[in-house]
Image (cartoon, rainbow, N blue to C red):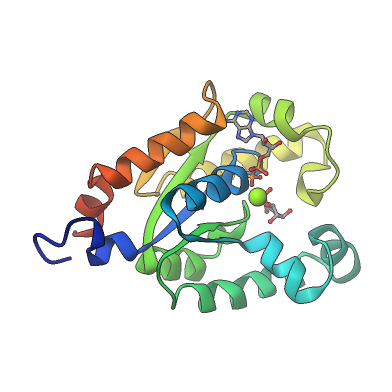
Length: 186
Ligand SMILES: Nc1ncnc2c1ncn2[C@@H]1O[C@H](COP(=O)(O)OP(=O)(O)O)[C@@H](O)[C@H]1O
Ligand SMILES: O=C(O)C1=C[C@@H](OP(=O)(O)O)[C@@H](O)[C@H](O)C1
Ligand SMILES: [Mg+2]
C-alpha cells in the first residue's frame, strides 16, 4: 500500500478472512461486518452448499469429508484471486496449508477464539456440523490440535465474553484504525 492512500488504499481492498473453530462466530460476525463495511460477504460453507446443491451434512454423509475438502479447496483458490470480500471460512478450511497460503496472500486473517465449553453452549445442540457430533473427547482433541493453526492468524479475538456486535466492532476498529494496513504492509 502506498503512503497516503488511506481508507481507499490497496490494503483496504484486501480480503478480510475469518478463521477459527466451529461456533466461534465466523459466519455471523462475517455477515454483519461485511454489511458494516459495505463489502460482499462469502461464507465458504454456504457457497459450497449453493454450488453442490447439497447441505454440508449431506456432502459428508453421501460423499465423505474428502469430497467436502476438495470443494473447499476449489472455492478458496477462486476466492483468493479476488479482492474486497469478507470471507467466513469453515472451521477446517485453513487446515489445508494451501488454503491458508492463498487466503493469507489475498488479505488479512482474523482468528476468532472461544473455549470448547462456550462452543458447546452456542452450538452443541445443533446437528448441522458433522464433526461436532462425535464424543466430547474426540471434539476436544480436534479443538486442541487446531488451535496452533488458528493462532497463526494476523489478529486473534477472544469472543468468550463478548456479544456478536462487540466482536464486529472490534474488527471494524482494527480496520478503521489502520492496524490491518500496518500488518499487511509487512
Ligand atoms: N460472540 C458470541 N456470543 C454468543 N453467541 C455467539 C457469538 N458468536 C456467535 N454466536 C452464536 O453461535 C452460533 C454459531 O455461530 P456461527 O457464526 O455459525 O459460527 P461459525 O461460523 O464460526 O461456526 C450462532 O447461533 C451464533 O448466533
Ligand atoms: O470445522 C470443520 O471442519 C467444519 C466446520 C463447519 O463450518 P463452521 O466452522 O462455520 O461451523 C463446516 O465447514 C463443516 O461442518 C466442517
Ligand atoms: Mg460458519
